[in-house]
Image (cartoon, rainbow, N blue to C red; front, side):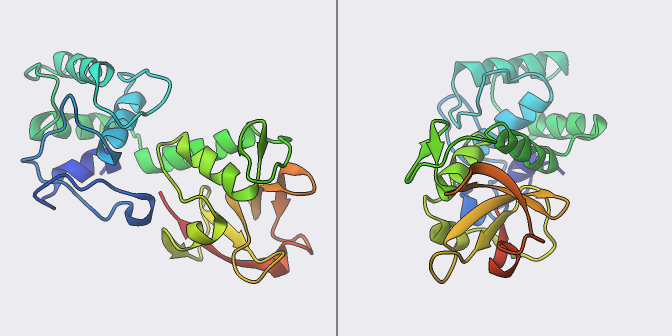
Length: 229
């Protein structure tokens, strides 16, 4: 069941409960709450991502705002599937979106994680910049925050704050946040796990680069991982 639509399918809260990075996949909305023009938040981001996978939402980023572009994408989906064309997502449209995702073998969550890794790799070689949060220069947490923002996930600013969010995991999967104790005790460095015992991060010595957990510097300093998607 796909994340964006699943959040609408099951009874949860009476009002709209927007997911945050620290409560991802925990809150769900009731079918009585429609997503429609003017809606905003994580549920809209998830809807936009589902529609993007189905080639209906083509705006460059998932904005989290249900404006004209999202409404037109929903209407196009409704027309193509013989649903009442009203530009709103409720039980009927949501169910059809879910069925279409399943029919195409699309897994929103795993695709999002794969995209996070792809996005992160685009910035290999970007120089390190203290407090940097843009492609002109990143610090470690600024890099992770920037990459995840491209997938609609708003993470905290510092590695310590990131360490306090999400779900603690030991079976690492691509897209997980990995933490290290470097210049001070506790999570003072953060990166993104990319698979094959490797992670990508913004380092003060070499900028954005890929390292291995078997590295004699990083290995002993690893302190844990969090899953936020």
